[in-house]
Amino acid sequence: MRARETPFRPFWWAFGLEAAGVAARPAEGTYNRYEFETLPAIPQELTGDLSWLAGRATPEEWSIGTEPVAELPELEAACERIGLTLPAVFLDFLRSPRLQSKIRSCTACFISVSARPVRVPGTDAHLIRFLADQQGCLFWYLYVTPTGHAVVASVDYYDGSPERDHIENDLIEFCGESFESFLYRFWLENEIWFAADEGDPMLEEAEEYIRRYRATAATRGD
Image 1 (cartoon, rainbow, N blue to C red):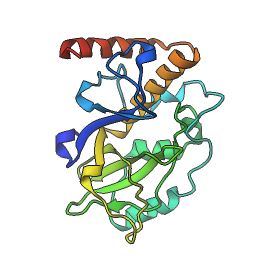
Image 2: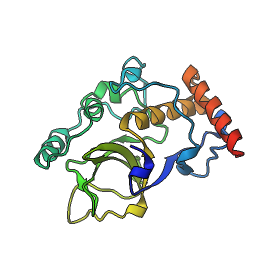
Image 3: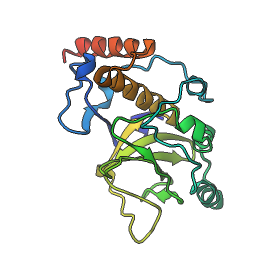
């Protein structure tokens, strides 16, 4: 799903990558908001089965998840009651602690799944939280419509409770054209950070991503 197909502004919330030589990604805090269109294309063909992740090594620490998602059965039941179909790749990931453990976060993000979908007012779309910052300053949601899905981020916490969920579209921002593309970019940028800031080996695809980022910035004159 493209950004223009959603009611949200397109921004990528993440950390800086200056230490990796990406001048277009200055760090001004734990998270910064970057124009989504400035991101380079990811150096990976996605097939919908997370095959790019399955063979990765499991890091010793900072994994976003290591345990079964307790809320998942309730979420699936709630979605079935309203006829909401969740993407298979989303469910495959949440059903697999092994896959979750292969993704690490330099800001200590963790799997945080809402047990109920949240209706976006005035639409037939819903939000489902799946990832949270450790300090609660940012949350990521699957944005699901009858015809597709995307990933959005917000500083607001939604958990499916009608008495507390008051969605404001101007506090939600588009940050992924699909769950798998978001997951890959999130994984890769964290691997770049750990290589540049902690001395871990830089992956070949990370080097390609950095080259693409520099080329995109040069083309734009950033």
